[in-house]
Structures are given as structure tokens and as C-alpha cells.
Image (cartoon, rainbow over all chains, first blue to last red; front, side):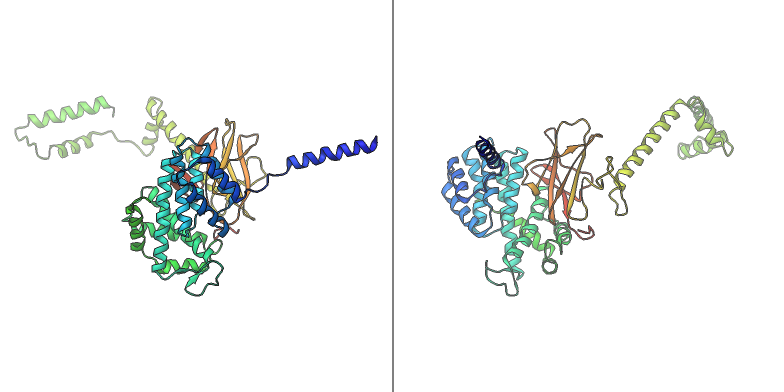
Length: 233
Length: 196
């Protein structure tokens, strides 16, 4: 009788432990299934790009699954949902950093912003990231290939992407805040302020110094104008 | 000099001017002002104070009330903002956690989010640090809601949600950004000078 009671207690405790343990981490396959369930016009293209993003570590399956779930819960058509995920997919295809785009989409969904508005905002920010990357390249600040040791003047991929993401995000905040592209000095001041505040603790000091020594106000004005003038993909 | 008497004085002076055979419109205002100044009653060194405190000047009492209220507002606002100064060592009403900012980092990347909302039923903070998923704040007996989070160095955008309403302008944030037509606050954790 005692043995039976002990077994019952062990069973109950085990069941409670299993029930109380956190859910297993999402896998890329979970994300694929969730996207397929949305029946998006560009579903296949998005899934393909996301798989590459997962394999290269640019996207986290758990956060991406949550984003897709929130999209599914939001009031919007498959076309609207498609537009948002497509921006992230395009950025991945161009090997651009996507963490800030993904976070911006999550913010828009949390705020209950209409999906087309989120998609437009993301598209502009993606164009800004691409323009800033081209600007860095033109200033001879390069990104080393993943897994390949960086040789001057190339920065390791993660460092380059961090720098790129923060500069582009600063430009995005400026434009979204209603700033004029012609105020290059103001844009540069915003970028310099952000990079300086992150210098040493988040972004290596030498990377900040390198960028601030080479980028000028006119460069940023051109980058913003180019991003604003590009047609949507 | 009360208003009625002033008007009477001006009337008399104008009358005298126009009655004069050499009346000139040019410079009339200056002449009237000069003559009027000569007729103003003179007060001793405490005359101004006596006039100000005279019980018959009810309107001045109201002026005092406005000035007093403004001073109180400045005092309260100043005390509130003073917590942000580097030499300030404020404490929360509960007396335990440092109340130095709505999102102020302390020693080990510990960021304290604070929202005074005595009548609120729920308060949460959302931001780039939690992928814009609500992290609930806990209320103390004074109606101050807090949540302490450990964050790695970085730049974090955030907003509070009080009973379902977004509150994106933390008065003590490092900066603000416009996002989807609304404000978000920004906190830098681990920036130079934070000691993090």
C-alpha cells in the first residue's frame, strides 16, 4: 500500500513538473507551418528567405514565430500580412540586418497600428538600411563574410551589422519624426549622439571613431533622399 | 490712483490741451504722459508693499494665489527632476529601491521602471527589451508601480501601458522617438557615466 502511494505521489509530481516546465523553443519548422497557415501570396519566398535567416543566425525562430502569431491575430488581409513579412524577407535576401525591422513590426502590432502602415514604415527603414550599407561601402568600410576572418578595412560581419543597424535606425527615427532630409547636420548629430552613447559598451570605440571620421552630413542627406525616392518593391 | 481717477486726469489734460490756442497733435501723447506722471501720488519706501497688501485690493490676493501655486509647482517639479541629477540619491516612497528615473540603470544593468498611477488597475512596460510584450509592474501602497529588469548594455525603446492606454513619454527618459505617430521613450543602458 505504501509503495502504491509513493508511486502515485511521484507520478503526480512528475506530471506537475512537466506541466510547469516552459514550452520547448520554437523551431524553424514551426515558423514555416505558421506562415503556411496564413496562405500568403509570397509565402514560399518568405519561408525560403526566413530559412536562410535562421541558418545564418539573423533571425530567431522563437521571436519570428511570435511575430507571425501576432500577425495572424491582427485584423488584416493576407496581402497586408504578406507585405510585412516580405520586407523582412527582402532584407534577408540582401543580407541586411533584420533585428530592428522585426522589432519595429512587433511594436506596430503591439500598438494596434494598421498593417499597411506598418508595412510602409518597415519598407522605408529597409531602404534606409540598404542606403546606409552602400554609404559605408563607399566610405571604404566593408563587411567581412560570415565566418571569414576580417582583414582591414573590413569589419567582422556582426560589428558591421550593428553599426549599420544603429545608423539606419537613427535615420529612420529622424524621418519618422518628421525631420527634413535637407538638415544633414541635424541627422549627423543624431547619428553621432547615438553612436557616442553606445561607444565602448555596445559598439567598439574604434568602429564609432571610424564612421564618425568618414561620414559627413551631406552623405546622410543623400542616403535619406535616396531611400525616400525609391519606389516600393 | 484708481482707474476712475486716472481717466478723469487724462480727460482734464486732454481738455486743457485742446482748449489751448497752440494745440498740436504731434507729441500729444508724450506731453500727456509727462503731465500725468507729475500728478501721480508718491509713496514712501514701503508704499508699494502697503498697496500690495492692502485688504481692499482683492484682485491682488488672487495674484498672490497664482504666484504661490506656480512656486509650489516649480518646487515639486524641481524636486522631481532633481532625482535625475548625478549627485542625487533619491529613494522611492517605499524606501527600498532607488527612484532615480522611470528607467534608470544602477550597478549591474538593473533598470527600474517606475510609473506613479494611484488609480490604475494595471500597468505594464513594453519595449525592445521584451519584444514589445507587456511586462507587468507591481503596485506599492502609495500607488507607485515598479518593475526592475536586468538588461544588457544597449539602447532600448519603451512605453508604459496604463489600463490599456499607451504612455510613451517618460519624463526622465534619455530621449524620445516618434514611432507610428506616437512617442516612445529611449533608455541607454551601460552608456558612459552610468557606471554599468
